[in-house]
Amino acid sequence: MSIDTETARRVAKLARIKVEDDQLPALASEFSAILGFIEQLNEVDVDGVEPMTSVTPQRLKRRDDVVTDGDQQEAVLKNAPDSREGFFAVPKVVE
Amino acid sequence: MTDLTKLTIAEARDAMRKGDTTSTEITNACLSAIEGSGALGAFVHHTPEIAADQAKAADVRIQAGDAPAMCGIPLGIKDLFCTKGVPSQAASGILEGFKPEYESTVTTQLFDAGAVMLGKLNMDEFAMGSSNETSVYGNAVNPWRRGNEDTALTPGGSSGGSASAVAADLCLAATGTDTGGSIRQPAAFVGITGLKPTYGRVSRWGIVAFASSLDQAGPMTKDVRDSAIMLQAMCGHDPKDSTSADLAAPDFEAALTGDIKGKTIGIPKEYRMDGMPEEIEKLWADGTAMLKDAGAKIVDITLPHTKYALPAYYVIAPAEASSNLARYDGVRFGHRAKLAQGDGITEMYEKTRAEGFGPEVQRRVMIGTYVLSAGFYDAYYNRARRVRALIKRDFDQVFADGVDAILTPATPSAAFGLGENMDPIQMYLNDVFTVTVNLAGLPGISVPAGLDSQGLPLGLQLIGRPWEEAELLNTAYALEQAAGFVAKPTKWW
Image (cartoon, each protein chain N blue to C red):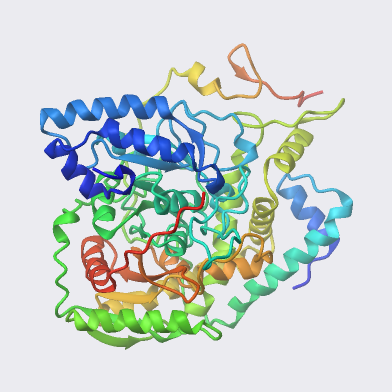
C-alpha cells in the first residue's frame, strides 16, 4: 500500500510529532516501504484464529482495591520540566 | 590475581569467598578499565561513588560469610533500567535530565543481593535498533575487529553497550533487555552469552517500556554459568508487574550438569534462509553435531509461520510502542521544547516529541499509530496478532511432539560495520532468528560457538520450552563445553 503525503501528515498529527512539510514526502515513502514489508501478512490464512491477547495462558493477578501508595507529591513533581504550587504546569489550555 | 576484570561471576564469587580478593579490588579494576574505554562508547553514565559504597558493603557481607552469589559483583546496567537518582534515559533525548525517584525491580533485586553498579550502558534509543546507532549518546563500538582492519563494527543492538562492556572486560556482566533479539543478537556479535527468559520470568517494573507484550530483561555474561547465577538474582514474581509469573524458580546453576543424553533437539528447516553465509550454515551444522555427540537426539522440525514473524513483529512492536511512548509529552519528566509566543498545549506536545525522539523512534511511533488507527486496526494490528497466535502454535506443536530445545543460528551474519546498514528494513532482518522467540514468549539463549574467516565471533541460539530456563541453560552449557569458545578481542581502545 502506498502512503501519500496527506496520510503521512495525518499520522504525524495523530502521533503528536511535528513534521515539517518538506519532510512529508520522504516520510510517506518510508511508511510505504515498511507497510509493503508488513503486507506479507496477507498471505497467511488466519480464518478461525483468535488474535493473541496474552502469550502465557495465566490469568492476571488481582489484589484488593485499596490504596497502597501515595503522599509523594514532591517525588512525583521532581522531574517535571515546569511545576507550580504542587501541580504540573502546562501552557494555557482554556481561553 | 592477575586481571580481576577478566573474572567470571562464578570465579569472582569463589575468590571473594576464599578471601583471595575483595569486591573493592575488583570494582576498582573495573572502574580503571572503564576510564580507558571511551572509544567503545559503552558506559554513558558513570557511578563510581555508588560502586565504591556498594563494594564496601558487599565486602562486609562476604566477610560475615552469608553473602549471596551476586554479592560484590560489579555490573553494568543498561540505560533502560530506572535507577534511583541516576540518569535513566533509554538513550533518548526526550528523557534528558530524568533521574528516577525509584529503582526498577530487577536492579533492586540485584543490589539487594549485593551486586555493584559501575554505571549505565549505551543502547539503541528506547531499545529500537539492532546496531546501537540510534542512541542519543552516539554509537557503542564492538571491541572485535575484522582481522587487522580498523573499521569500527557494531556491537549489535539494542543492548550494544552491555555487549561491548562485557566483551571488553569493563564489567563482569551486564543487564540487557530483549524485545525482538536485543540481548541475543548483540551477545552473538561480541562473543558472549545472552539469555532472554520466558516472558513473565523477570519483572518489567521500572524498565522503560518499549513493547510490553514482548519486552523481557535478562543477563549478558561471559559464560553460561554466569547467566544461570545472574538470572537467579533477577527473576521472581513481582506484585508490581501484573504479567510477572507467580512461579517458583529452580536453582539454575545446580541444573548445569552438562548431561543432555536423551534430550531431543529440533532443527527447524525454515531457519535455513536464502543467501545465508556459508560460515553460518557450517556453524549451525557443527553445533548440531556437537549436541549429537553429547548424546542428544537430533530431529528435523518445521515451524511453518517463521517467515511471517518479522512482519508481525513490525506491526505489534510499533503499535505497543506508540501507546507506551505517548507518555513522553513534556509534562511530567524529561525534555520540553521551547515554545513560541502563542503556542498551546498541542504545539508543546508536537515540538517536544519532534525534538526529543530520534528518527527511528519517530518512524516506529508513527507506524504504530497508523496500524492502530480507525480503519486499519483489523487489517494490520488484529491480523498481526492472529499470525502471532499461529507462530506460537508452531512452537507448541513441536514441543508437544517431544522436542526439548531448538537449535538455530543467533544472527544471519557476523557484526557489520557502523554506518554500513542504513536501510530500515535491512536492519530489521538482523532479528530474523530471534524475533519468533519473543512473539511466542519463550526462553532463548545465544552462545558463542566460533569465529568467522575474518576472526569475528558467531553465536548459536537455543530456544527452550516456556519456564524451562534450567533445562535450556544446561543444554547451552553442554554446547558451550563442546564449542570451547575462548577467543577474546585484542585490545585497541
